[in-house]
Image (tube, rainbow, N blue to C red; front, side, top):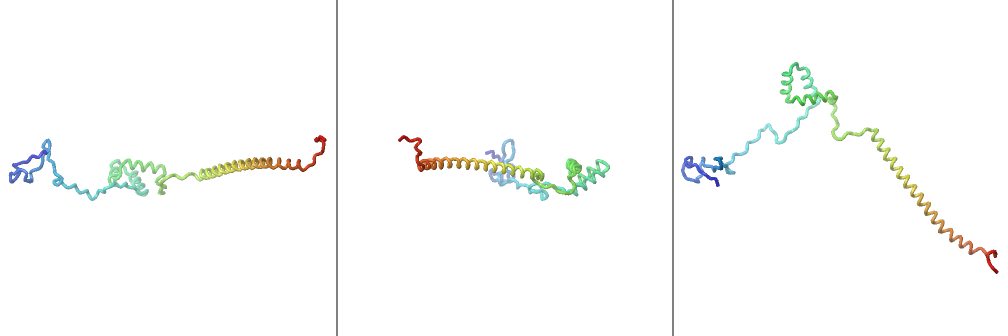
Length: 179
C-alpha cells in the first residue's frame, strides 16, 4: 500500500528484491515492519517476577528497625536505615502507630471475622430458647382450646340422644295426657 523502495540502498538496484535497506514506508516517512521483520520482544529481567508479591515483615524485624530509627541522631541516618532496608517513611509511620496501639506485641492477630463476646453469644442462645418456649406455649394453648371445643361438640352430640332415649323409656305420668 505505502510501499516505497530505496533504489540507492539496494545493492542490486532492482525494485522488490527485498534488500536489507528496503522496508515499506508509511505516512510521514515512518517505516512499517512486517510481522516477520519485527524485533523479538525483550526478554524479561530475571529479577522481576510476572506478578508482584507483597512483602511481609515479622514483628521482630519491625521492632528492630523502629529501635534503630529511634536511636538515629539525624534525619540522614534515618534515611540511610530506610534505604538499606528498602522501606518507606510511610511504612515506618504505620509501624510506629502499631507499636503505640500495642499491636506489635508478637502475637499475630487472627484473620477473618471477629469473634463475638461470650456473654453476647450466651444471651443470643438464651433469647432463642425463650422465643422457642413461648411459641411452644402458644401452640399448647391452641391445642388445649381445640380439645375443649371438640369435647364440647361431642358432649352436645351425645346428650340429645341420651335425653330422647330417657324420655321414651319413662312411662308418661298422666299429668300432661288427656284421657
